[in-house]
Amino acid sequence: MSVAPDPEKIFDRAVEEGERRLEQPLLELVSTSFIAGFTIVFGIVALGVVDALVEPQFGDVAHVAGALAFGVGVVFLVVGRTELFNENFLDPAAKAVDQPDSWLLAPLFRLWVVTLVFNLVGGFLFALVFAVDGVLPAGTAHALGRTAEEIVHRPTAAVFASAIVGGALVSLLSFLLAGVDTVGSRITLAYVVGFLLALGPFDHVVVTAIHVFFGMLFDPVIGYRTLVETIVVATAGNFVGGLGLVTFTHVAQVRGARKSSDADES
Image 1 (cartoon, one colour):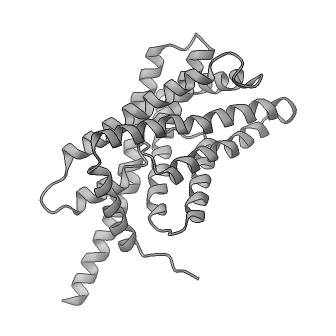
Image 2 (tube, helix red, strand yellow; image 1 turned 30 degrees about the vertical axis):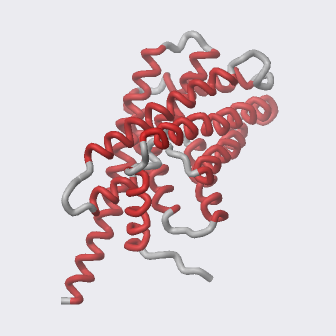
């Protein structure tokens, strides 16, 4: 039986992966971000299709069934090693903290901005494909529109708090992935986190924005201003949850362990 690595080993792996992500050529970063954007749409559409099929007979159980379907989209992301905003908080931040002479602010800004923008571009463009009449099974458009309405009708504070949870979940996934060595383990972790993210549902800015965009396509009551406000609030919450709750606390954990180790050696 393999033993899970300790936090210091996980942190070292995160630093290595963070260095790779920060040093990506622009074309590679744009491409992987775009791929991640349209890939997660598969999970969103699966959620809508299953919800539409299950809800008429089983009511609220449809929400759980839809969450189970959505998890597949996160598996696609993780196995495909694409760049989803917030999923790339931990590793690059770990590299920045580990860098002795710089916080790497410019590379971090470049990574996060490009990732977010092209996640959204890829997701929105692929959503337009699914919006073509006849592509989705009957009832799916209504289910996706209903989900979008539920999102935009929540108070701003609720969206922000939900995004804190969503950001923490997705960044925690990054930390856990650095602690496993097999494809099967990565698939299991990705699926569980995807299920929990949709079960809440908790807000991840890209997933939530694509949900709202689907709502715009199927429900003209939702406008661009609402979409932009949702993106801004969810992004802020994801930063608090992903960087504040998960990334910096794990960094503090490792630094504390290393100081203790150095003290023992001296």
